[in-house]
Image (cartoon, rainbow, N blue to C red; front, side, top):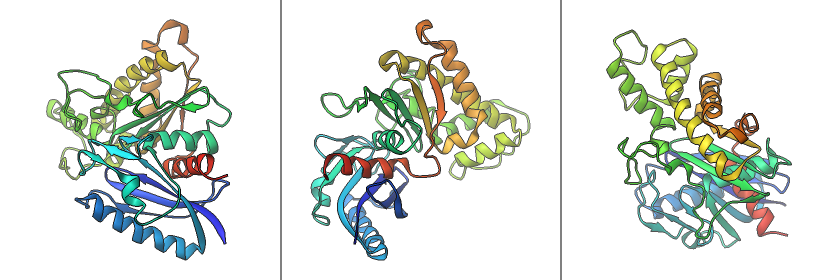
Length: 317
């Protein structure tokens, strides 16, 4: 019976999970909504039931569980004060989940998991210094220095999504104002579109869509069709992201920065302004040195792969 690790990508809206073998192949995968579960108890029970079906269907032996989650503390196995999840405070995720699976478990930040996936199975193979930016419900980041993930002394290093753009800016789920993810994320670009629509009296296909129903994919498709408001929204998003990436380069001098997630489907509408503003605001000694790349795992789940890879690497020999 083939040995597999259950890799889990716990997102603010949806949770994806799959069975990953030692070579990094996802044997089978599925997903479920996250935001319909008001408590961690009902969420873990539903996740256990669905993942158990996968394990049985694939006729595999589970030897470990890896979880990528927002505001995850790698050292303690906890999720702490996540702005985009309904479970507030500190959740001892690993301790609670061992009720269902008595196998080695590792919990890490979802973007850290994506960075590990990129390093082992994607475009960062052979790189020792790089950053992965995940553009989802919020903005996550995984920073690798000298071949090692940057955790810091308390496990929370590298939260670029909560670096500040404007201290008087948009309110953030973390309780502060002006965090990067309130501008650069699926939800952030929706807020930008509605601000632009309020100031714009021209035609736009987005004008009749309510904020609740508007999606980042709709904005992307509108931009590709030449919608001026959608294009302006990506220009604004790329400007802010490019400026903050220029700041990030100063701290870790990465060889490359990888963008991962739904907003990357906009192709040149997000990459061109981001690269342009990153270079414009870059400290001189770094200009022209840092590659801005799309994740090679965009069609796969980097966080599922990375969370599983962490278990294979650290817990199973």
